[in-house]
Image (cartoon, rainbow, N blue to C red):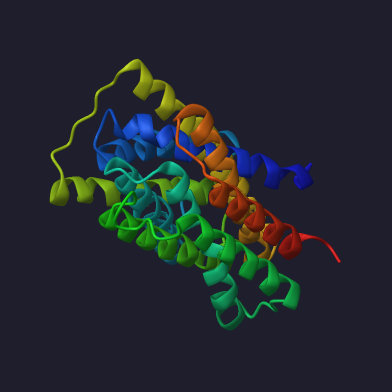
Length: 283
């Protein structure tokens, strides 16, 4: 069953970029995320009780989990949601943040003592090259500069959080870890609301459907699968599947959001997909 987890993860994680657009059209990004992770925290709390996993943890594990949530759910998702809210195309946002395997390959060696193979480096290079083809010279024109900066912050955050989660992944059950990570994300966005925005949410039918998708399929589904993959595999190998997300997100954006794809974009997405295959295939 675990062999199909990466495929399920890619489909669910990619779809999150698409449902982000209707969410930020009906709310500010930080209020939406605070609401989302408040619900997610409650869900994982009751799930932990159902599994009879104690939510009482020591101070060190508490800080580690909350910090992981601030990175994953705070800086990463906050950057993505904010960038899309100011006009960043969903497919390009997906592309930028999923350059993560490049940074992870660079950092996981010295930090996690993982051996990065030549094949993984070749795959990462192809993924990076394909991403550059798609980005082109659009930053500052069709791609808002502030949105680009926000997604770079999101990229750094998800890379840091992946490596951090790998270091602490064996400390506690996933349901308990996810509970405290959701609390960390919720608190982060509550603070962002106080500092940056006038909070509002339009609880329309569109918002409700999109938010339900992100809560149940992404936060409960895809994020839990990601934590499991990080726990079972090396960090560098796990994040290589992220290079598939831009192509899937771009197709979904074309299908549901009418975003335009040109031939160079398609070539770039194709090259990144080859890079993933090379980096993740078995010997």
